[in-house]
Image: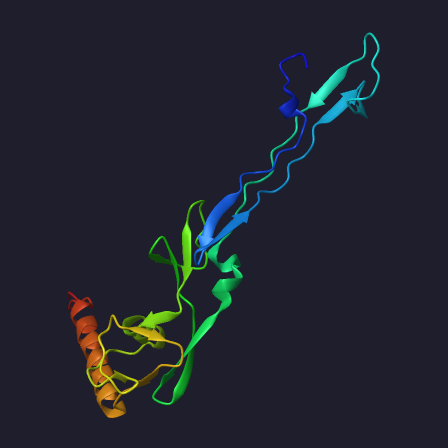
Amino acid sequence: IADGISTLDLFPRRGKSLEFTVNGTNRIVRGEPGESAVILLNKKEANLSTPIVSRDVIEIIRAKIGANAVVSIGDLPETKQTITFELNGVEVTCPCLVEVNKHLVAEDYLIQSEDEVKVLNYYTLEQLLQFADLPYHPSMNINGQQIALSERLYENYVLQFDLDEMTSVMEETNSAATVELDSTQEKELPEED
């Protein structure tokens, strides 16, 4: 086609696809379809088969490329799963944690091509305590055994702890925070006469 218009300018093209893995399985999310070129012949819509004559005015509005694929972690069905633990007889249901390229991410993380997404089927003791808003105490045990903060906890694990000891730890933590708050507050200056 004359006037520097390529045939590629006439046909719609999809936006870029995303290729990534979820738990080791390859995924491809296609980009959005583009819009076809519009050919106007004497200001009326035409097509490549429309006959032309001398002095016709041909205008070509180039095809548009579609939007690139966009997927967030929260869009993946696998990330809707939950894990349930028992804390001193109370069931606690937690959302599954998600790693991308070995780093924990939030559900609003936008997946990039070549990302390795892994939905974790465990929490560490530290993550579970953080989720439950509990401090660590050495009396804590999982399924009857003491464990480290970095230990992995799987579905239906049972966390037991001495409630009286835990309450005293929480009170100490709260009073330490209050003392710290008091020491950082501005002191009022006496009014001048």
